Image 1: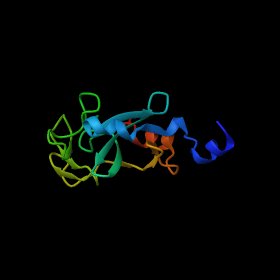
Image 2: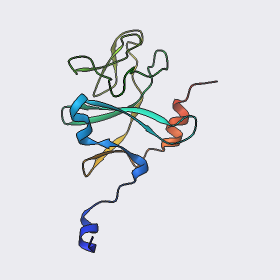
Image 3: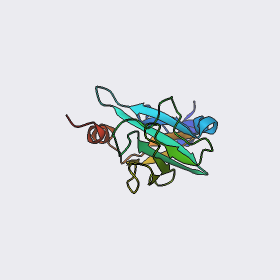
Image 4: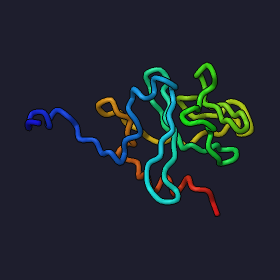
Length: 138
């Protein structure tokens, strides 16, 4: 790679890569885990039109993961995020719960950025801190 090539290609912090943007084409959503130890950051990323949003993978009602199967977070028509345990429905763009036991509450957002076809945690996100905040209470 020449100096000119490296000046045009951004360097990706692989520790912050959530997925390739193209990974969202098949299901429209994807689970991810970033970090190490007992409580890494567990999230989901969803595509809504041209927008991409990230949320902590935890239902505001019961605190457990929203999905039962890998990368399966959406209703059959792909319009909403679905909690597979109690049927809560969330808007993809805002994480706001429209129906279910946590109606009126929201998923916790994770700021993301798009770089060269990859979805990454935004530079402002401290993954360890966000994971600690999302960990269940003892």
